[in-house]
Length: 251
Image (cartoon, rainbow, N blue to C red):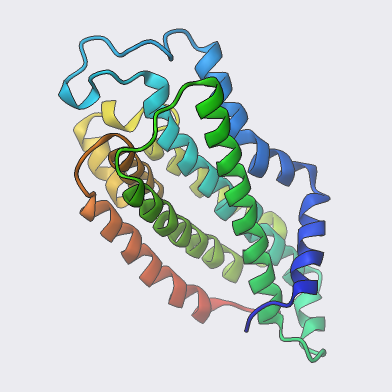
């Protein structure tokens, strides 16, 4: 069932009361992008001895898809799952069962708030990149949008699975972080995806966040449609959504 406006407003206020949420979800992607661009030497210089696929690009250009993927993962894996696990731990969901408002509306409201936070965080990162780092517009805007939407669905489905099974907020955070940091590696946060060894690129394609970064990279700088990566994201979503629904416990 669709969440009510009151529930969404209440969840948004609770979200904004957490300084960590505001910083890591809304500010950190833009801050990381700008800091890497201005602090690390050579990030804004054209890549030397680049092949045809990288001709004219700068390291910071290749870093942009990884930061957008990071924004998705931060919301879906670090801020969203612990909230519902805490509600389960403290009996909030059980108390909802005694009211006319079904607990599913609370879940819907939390998802809406997190998706809005994701949109704000990504918008801030893109505006900062265009104003301060002179990013170019994507060569395939529809591919970029499609990859981002599919990536958000797949990662939110993964976060929902954590929220479905974690008995406490601490357990949810532990599970989330055990997935978050390895996924960031395959997304290219530490080593840009296009310069990864081929074997790592293949592994990254099977990892949801790796497929997001690869799809965004192709959509931004390439000319082909990354069908394989998009199919991987769709497959993860199709598997994780019903699995999350089946395993979800309100109490």
